[in-house]
Image (tube, rainbow over all chains, first blue to last red; front, top):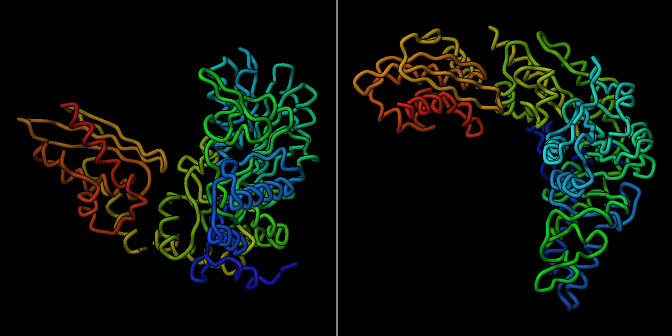
Length: 395
Length: 119
């Protein structure tokens, strides 16, 4: 196991010691293994996949297939259930599109109070189209899920349960397996947004039992523009593809078309081969880091933040990786702007989760989010600069 | 940066031209959802020119400072107000504002130009 922070940081060439990068929930720095894998593939001569009949195309196809297997294995499944998309947002939209015809007027879609817009707006749209109703699983006062109330909300009208595994604002971890058990009792389909969870929590889709799970590369130390949509075999067979065109059609006649079977049905257009290869490489490395010292660092961050005057820190029980906070009388964007000028990178605003953040603060929150390469020096840089900013602003 | 923040804060907290105008000719509201900025402006138009301005602004310090500086400057010809852009407001503020805060900077200008478009 790697536990020396400088050894870890040396594996991320984008890091600098004069910058405290604490915006990892937005995107992480890229691991050297992903950079190397993409460089090797591109420099070795590339081709498209599923089209060419020459040796270089065969090599590319194998690398793409291998990448698919690696990414699927990361969450405990095989390549036959793993669709590559350009983003988690595209994956969730694809699933919503594919399920829309199953909804009847009055049917219910359950989403949680913690959802990113990516796992909220697609469901609102198909609900509007089909006369279905979107209901929200409520949050408790301690910023965790009201699981008891959520379980009681599921009934024979519930057709879809769309839920994040980990809040991108608060770090709250949701009880996916428990929710899935109840959802399947009422024959609802469970869709999980694991965009944040993938870099912080162990994920085994068999243990969770969910029907679909989506996570992306750029929050897991890989390149941007590539994500994985893991689907049950039933969903792969039964859902219509959202994107149609090259690469996904089986037979195209003068006035009709049929789709390929399996995951290729959902991958219309030339795929992001180098992205998939980089994604797979980063996931091969990620398990070496998981669970190292992030919890200790998060506790230190919370304790140090709470020592500042006029600060509110949101700390749900069992949360991981992310800390949101507000400072009395100071707009989060102004604070983030000043921190940025001092080499501290945090996010401010509603974090694309406006319905949740509006419950925390009228003007949004500041968010510090941790990765495997952060240490006490990053926390100290954040807290000492915050202290100075607050002091001078109130002088 | 802190010094700039202090200057912006002083500008943002000025009490110039604040509050609704009773005998306004046109008004408009602009919002910047990412920061929660909101700016309402009321214009009194006399002989085709802006004779008086008042406003209300809430949100981040850049948006509020921008409103304060812009609306002091807005009295006069409509054409000059119509031709302003982000750089015009940036130079009125006299401090460096990141391009990432462009919408904060220009929300008051959008309110002003929306109001002018109603004349």
